[in-house]
Amino acid sequence: MNQPYQAIEHYRKALEINPNHSPTGATYYYLGTLEYSVGEYENASRNLSKYVQNKGAHPDYVNRSKQIISDCAFAIE
Image (cartoon, rainbow, N blue to C red; front, side):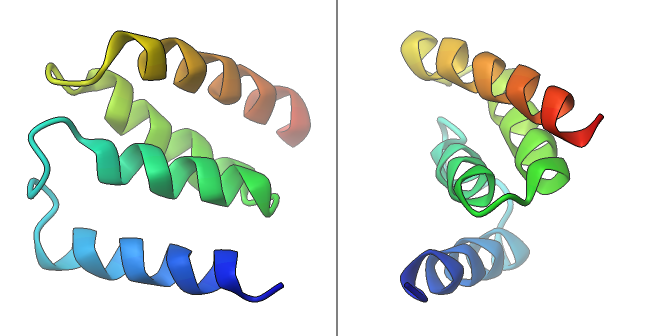
């Protein structure tokens, strides 16, 4: 039960240490999807938006990120 929250904290710490450590921005993707899974929609949307803006982001994950961002906007309303 607690593992998603632990993973979120680890990803946040990694980004705090070096926000640009991943050339693809994958850390933002993984963090955003975890935040989405636990209902942290505003954080998820923010982090997935950062992922989408990364030039090295994988197109399939960009498409999935855009869908989740849309879902977050709906959930926040």
